[in-house]
Image (cartoon, rainbow, N blue to C red; front, side, top):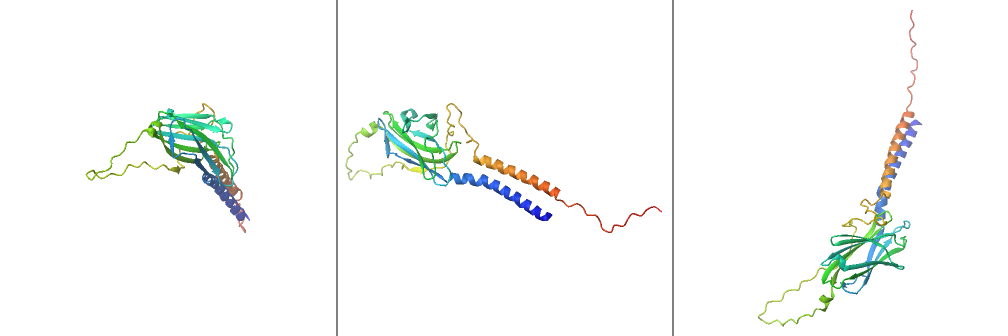
Length: 272
């Protein structure tokens, strides 16, 4: 009977430890693979001036989890032009959406001050729209975007990147000179230089600059990502391990059998 209780207690402790460890390792892996982000509305090439393009970032969820609010953050990087030559406005159906802007060199991060009005659920999407324009004095350059969707605890759900060229009015209106026909004595023509292809690349890497702020104006940017489900799961697992070990030791002491008295023990010999 005592041996059966011991085995049952040991099995319970082992199952408790495995449950705590599984909660800490399985939850974040499933959540990371359940979200995806897409960028749409990008032209083949941006034209400087009064021309405004509207970009859309869409995040979706494919698992069976619950609904979650989303905070958008756009990472903008320029090459061949300045940040003050780029105009970006975050818009919703009700009008402009407030942003918190942080710049570092040729990179700017535009983060929503408030959570997106939409609610991300399985089978539903949340969309952020950005109106982008460039100043008239831009000659030629390149701009890259990284749309990032975060949950209220600043956990990165999904990220999508894209890059496009920017050309100014002067570059497009500049007349091209007529090229003379080649003569037999002229050198062989060389292949024209080809520009780097522009592609849309999904990426799950961490942002190159600091992550977005939690939403309140003036608050410092969080670099740890907040205390989330993963940390809580590990703490719970460690607590369960310690409790199980202590319970096992105490039950072992209580169930330890007392030494049995010897049978047919010879009585002590009295004094003569």
